[in-house]
Structure formats: structure tokens, C-alpha cells
Image (spheres, rainbow, N blue to C red):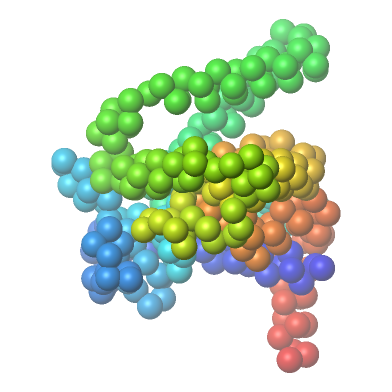
Length: 299
């Protein structure tokens, strides 16, 4: 199991470095990139470098900025991987606090170079929550009172976010997938509105959204409700919470990202939450390198 942890940690480091270098290299015109359209869609207009991966341009009224994707399909996926793994660095480096102090800023910078709204929202929300916890502890609030207050605050933030006009968000974000995501959500909500009791309970089977709509769903929760039903959604989300509950920040980051990325059944996602659950961390970075080198020599 340590080999899995070593592989994931190495991927975190490599993708963080590539994200930073690619972001700087593209925006300062230091490296060559090839323009291309993935799948022939105008929305997926990317720039490609064979060593550093893809760059997704984000256009504002004042100019354009390149967002790092590495070799993932969208900046949001790389953002999910780096942002959530930021909260697993201490698991990867159990007895190496000094290296963790170096690795965390590296992973944070890599996540920021994706220029993904998801990373800003997650880091902003968790920073605010942790600041509130520290203040309440300093004021000698009880632990249960702190937990209840934080949970109520989270619910309020979600409700407020639901009433923020999408046009206002879109104006601030520049070119983004916000409008496209709304169309996907509306199509999926129509499936829910026309479902019978059985379909609402157990879903309409995996792949239903893609097979019956011109556009896929980008919200993992809505996709689960349509395809797995209410029962399946509760069981699956409960499993994710069960695997991540011992690390509050990682759990909250994961649950927030599932609102905008569909990756629940991917190997990378499953391996990450299992590492979070079982803590397959090595003692030091040298141990992880040794595991990888040993695996390479035996092949």
C-alpha cells in the first residue's frame, strides 16, 4: 500500500511543479504551445505543450490568462486533485514536518495556477472556517458549540450562494463554464422532474444523462440523483464521508468539489479517499522514493 501512497505523492509534486512552470511559461511567453480544439468543440480551445500539458485560456475584458490543466481535461480537475491533496500532505509525510512546510506552499501554488474558481472557493471557505474556530476557541466556546455554529454557517453560505445572480458571478469570472454548467443542470433537473417514484428511488442507470442528452452533467450530486437515485446517492455520499471524516478539511474540500466535477468512480478519486481513510503514509520522503525505486528495479 505504501507504493500507492508514494505514487500519488509523486504525482502531486510533479503536477504542482508542472502547473506552476506551465502557468508562468505560457503567460510570460517563455515556452512554445500549440493551439488545438479538444474533440472539435469551440469551448475546449486549449494550448498544448508535450512536457507541461494543456493550458486553458480564460478571457477577461482586460486580457487573457492561461490556466494550467497539466494532462487533465479541464483546470477544475487539476484544481480538485491539488487542492484536496493539499490537506493530505501531512498524511504523505507523517514524520517529516519540515518537508511538509515546504511541500504545502508548492501544492497550494500549483492549485492557484489552475485559476479555478473551485480552488478559491474551497481555500477561502476553509480558511474562514478555521479562523472562526480559532477565535471561538480563544473565547472558550465549547467544542460542540463550535461544531454546531460552523455547520449552521455552512448551511447559510450555501443558501446565500443559491440566490446570487449567475450573471453577476459570470461578469466577475470572465469566460467560464458557468453558463454551460447551468444548461447541464437544467437538463438533468428535467430528468428528475419527469421521473416516477421508482426512478427517483433507485435511479435510471449509470450513463443515462450522457445517453439521453446532448450535454453531460458536471455536478456529481445531480448526476448521482438521476442515475443512482435517492437511495444510491445517500449511500455513496455516506461512504465518501465515512472515508474522509477523520480529516475535516479534506472531507469539506472533497464534498465542495463534487458540486462542480464528475470524478466519483475514477481510480484517482477512489485511491485518494482510501489514502485519507487508512493513512498509508510513509515516514519520510526518502522512504517514498525508495519504494518507487525498488518497484522500478523489480520490473
